[in-house]
Length: 100
Image (cartoon, rainbow, N blue to C red; front, side, top):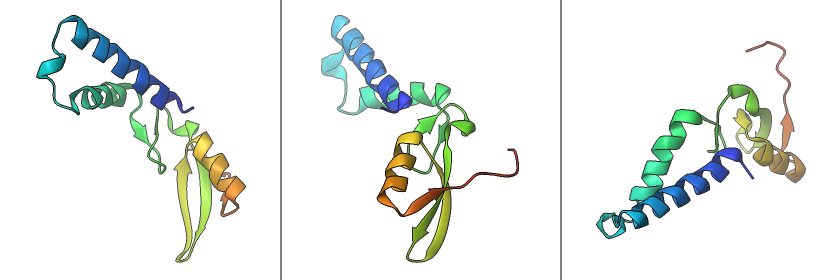
């Protein structure tokens, strides 16, 4: 599983437990806990890849060339999504010759 998604679950569970402890849960709206978890995560996982997953460092992404009906598109994806796209057969990994 993607590290930032695992952390999101842990953070949300911790916030829910704290809200229940201080009896604040009835005062919250449906999205308050997940919104707070997103805000906390963005401090640590501040780079959003093309697949929508968050990472800490840009080198955690895998650069892919994807075949689309309009031509070729390029983007950086997390390891799990990149493996899925490559195994589906419509993407290939691109090795950068220029260090970032």
